[in-house]
Image 1 (tube, rainbow, N blue to C red):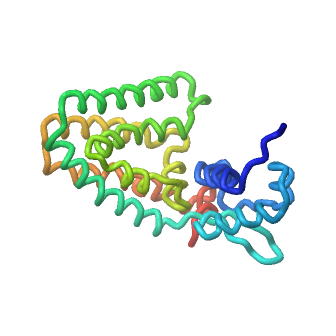
Image 2: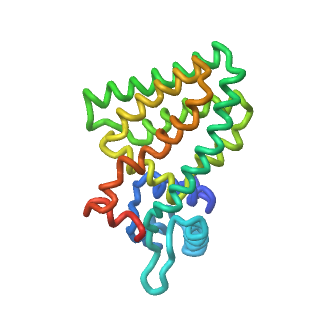
Length: 229
């Protein structure tokens, strides 16, 4: 018997597809297509779309349909600020108490990321943005786990209409890879040397890197349509 997805499951699928840029800003989402895709009636589909609108992923326009919202750079920057403020404190506490085993976990995360980078150099067509981002975040997650702050981490990294899409645009074509690898190595050095004064400047450079890298692209024909004025 075919499994009929619940509204919650359909919401999660569409939220992830928008957050991961599988459905791009400005695209129209058809109720009819969703009904056929998920083999479900209009009522639960409309409920899903209303929930997506409440969370900033789409805008339901009367007589036009449901349109995926553009990315707000202002809101994305506020999420970056929030993450930087929280992560600076958590990393400082982690460095204070981390063990050799904890540091080894950080090194292991970096090694996994390096494997993805090495593969990208040999097979760029197989580069997976979401795999790279997940592995990138796994290093940062270590200090939240050690400090028993996972609920904070999950809140900072949950799918979000502006920040989630912005950081993926930054990864497109692997352009942020060199910066990420250098900055991760610097993070490891800070942890190993317990250099508390270097934490905030480096995290600020690391987390705001996308704003710096994408500065000119925000006004290019390729990307301008993805952002709100």
